[in-house]
Length: 110
Image (tube, rainbow, N blue to C red; front, side, top):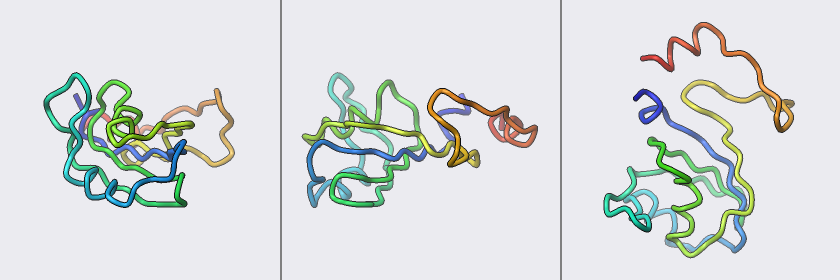
């Protein structure tokens, strides 16, 4: 499925400050509860001690929340900012949407 190969970027707000070793663990892959197969390597960009941008390259059930739970943290708020080359407009309100362009549809199908 194409959705599993598109990079997805999430802005994540955490309940606790992120531990120093979190980035290295995410880059290696995390073993999630009830799933022996580790996640694919993820990239982390720290915005503050409790806010990060996380890029993942697969789409497991509640993956981002489960990854941070495996690191001993709780996701308080989660926002997908980008999927593949599609970025949400900054002024798009919660619950709103915009149609995909023809190019975006083609990229998703590749």
